[in-house]
Image (cartoon, rainbow, N blue to C red; front, top):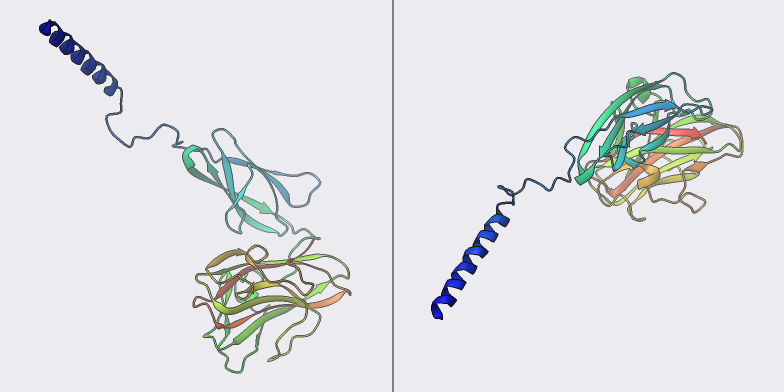
Length: 293
């Protein structure tokens, strides 16, 4: 009787070991080979098609096979968009359009295409001269206005941007230019702004007023938008359009970069910045725009 029990147990153990061996033999030989859900080569190709009836407006269409989402860069930095994206390029020039396709498992691939815009949109073209800070000719379109006796705050120009730096002490400086506008027409003001680190007790403000700027006199006519550590932005590193990263209310008490004027003629676009504990890397601006809506 005992022999039969021992024999049955031995047969059971042999069967269990054989079954376990067959199961483990189906597992991968190595760890970390993945589960097969990540695309190794996401297709980021896309087409650019002018939209009939719309000036300088284009349809960007990504191919959709195995693409989950799309990011685009039309010259202002990457943003999350749709696979079928409508864009406007009001200014004449050559643009590099970048598409980042995102597939399964977060895999990404990038394709870039060039598009040439022959003429500017007469209604939405940029009225700011030298807004791209491309060279000395662009720099000369701006007037630098010192606002502090110490001269501790200073704007400097380099290819593609302008930067305001200050060693603190509540010093400030502005740059400005005159622009012709039409009565009661709506315009949008924007620009790219960035800083590698944050500040304390610092402001960066944009004005569009009819008052003529005066050297040494703080400009306060028609504040439109800006950054302010008191209002909660610019305390840490930032980069993006001022209309997005800014937090300063306009003189009407709202956050908006849309302006219009009560008379046809010249207005002054003024960018004024300074502070007590200023960011060590400065605040950089690029692609300054004032366009008809």
